[in-house]
Length: 251
Image (cartoon, rainbow, N blue to C red):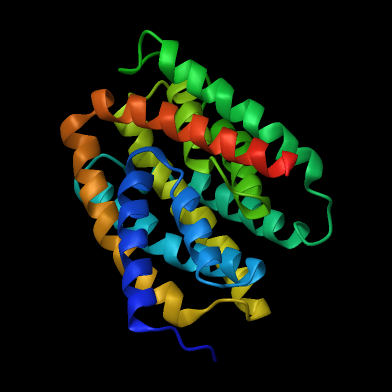
């Protein structure tokens, strides 16, 4: 078992807290945590597995806060949660067998599209619901859950856009429901990484603690600052994720 210095653990705790705060508001926390773990000398596969563990801390913290605040009704979300879990499990199982190059090349385009939507959309305060929640679960819940298990970057942004455009939710409410589904996909993916023995518990638990604290702060800002804060955050995070993925493909 590899031992990490207290300085490295403290740094990664801080990284987890910052990522948790940003992720609770707009998603994209992996943009911060994954490069930090790789810089600490953690191999890529262990980084991905450990990232799922620490991300569960932030997504659980945000989900718990939103449920207690009455923004999310878990009974209504049971079927979307189930479909998201199954999708993520399938994606995690297949990621080791299917070439992901095509998907990787498509993600920057999807992220730029989402950034453009949130940048120019006139009404994000809630609108007409276009599909039923069950249809949302079977299509969006499963497919984005699959994507999160298979690849991951931008999952929160994809869920948020789907909740706004298809379920007619306001942006703060969409963000709250996004964290419930994101926590579900994180748990499903983590379970299958655990079977492979790739999770570094010392790093993961330290960063999870930071994620939990940061996500609580970010969740409070979602409900107090609302659309004025979330909208530019999603745009910025999507554009940064897109640029980073494009640079990775080029290199």
